[in-house]
Image (cartoon, rainbow, N blue to C red; front, top):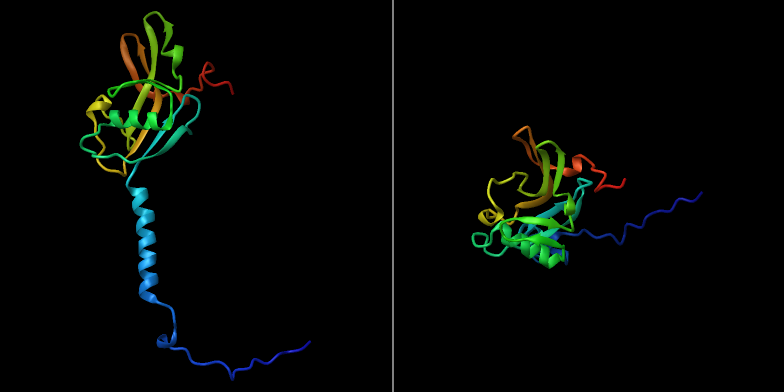
Amino acid sequence: MTISKINTNNITNLSPNTCSFDYPFYTFFFFLISFLFFSTKAKAITWEVVGPCHKQPIAKGHFKVRDLDKNSVGKTTLSIFEETKLSFEGNEAMIKHIEGFPGKFETIELGGQDYRSLGWCYEINGKQPPLYMNKVYFQSQNDHLTWVLGQASYIEGNWTEYCTPVHRFNYSFFCKE
């Protein structure tokens, strides 16, 4: 085994004045990249469509809403669906079908006068507004829009649930698993 000696004759004392690293340039570059990365992510709402079989979205993305106070959730939804080529039926007030759902299963007869009604419900930041979507506006570009296929049940003359996500029930007519 051989042990090499390090030649210390060529080592010089480096001081900050002898270094060629340009601190102001790299600091500026770092902040510029950070600003661009974080500002582009923060300036678009996020959205997702949750289908009938799984909690995982069947579609999702980001969308830049221009003039938050002039473009309702309804108008924005139509723009998102048109831009992403999601098939849908609806207008600025409400959505009836997304990607063919609920299709012929809009109403499930339970016997007598009882039934379930299936349809699309929306949430902003996890909360369902009590208004049609053409009357609701995003508050910031950081908002999150979720569309979920939900059900409402009419049992013994009373509405017993509203917008309960259908994926919780794994209906065999939707889900073949």
